[in-house]
Structures are given as structure tokens and as C-alpha cells.
Image (cartoon, one colour):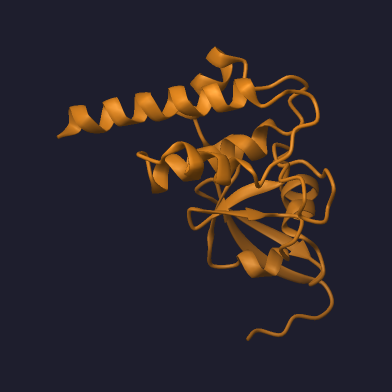
Length: 163
């Protein structure tokens, strides 16, 4: 285990770019992403891991950036919503109106993207389970669920065309 104290300079791989930042050991990944690197997609909602608005992918797995220290991300690949770059899930969220105010959208996008990367053939129960890690206070989730279903269909079609 690495011991950090005082201000330390670390390198973070975010969206396939290396960022050198000076942090305090207690700085959360969320705060460093937003305030030091400038990625404002992950949002500070509850800041206790309940809402999922801060969800990012770390080595392909969803994590809540408000619960993780920035120093824990050293040597890992972090992906924020800014790094998704024209993915099927983004297109589907636009097409199906999978957002209202947009505050929670980045977290839903990241979780849904990770699900489709992990299991593009997920059944309804698994999709609901993955989406349950995020909260939206504006919608009835219908647009979000439709967007995930559309993106899943499009990913499955792309995968079958590759075979």
C-alpha cells in the first residue's frame, strides 16, 4: 500500500489521456475530475453514493467517484461520459428522450454503457438491476429504459454483423 501525505502529484488516465494533478490524499476522484481536470459530466449529487450521478468507469467497471479517492485511481483507466464519443447508448438516450433536466444522465449513460459492454444480451431483470444504481428525480424512468433497450438492440445488431 502506498502512503500519501500532504500535497502529492499523481498521474490519472482519464478518457485515454494522462493528466498530472496535485491532490491531497483525501480528495475524491469526483472533485479532482471536476475541479482539477475539468470533466464536469460526473455530477456531485448526494456525495454519499446513493444517487449515481457521479458514476464513472474504472477499468471498465462502474464506480461512484464521490466515494473513491483520487489516489485510488492511479494506474487505472478512468472513463467519464465525455469519453464515450458517439456511442449507441448516447444516440439512444437522445432518440428516446432518456433525460429531462440532465443532471443524472451522465451516471445513467455510464452504467448503461458498462452493462452493454459487459453483457449485451442482458435480460430485463439484469437491466433493471444495473439501472437501480442511479436515481432520477425528474422522469418515470420510461425514457431511460427505452433508451437502454434501443441501444441494446443496436449493439446486438452490430455484433451480429461482425460475425
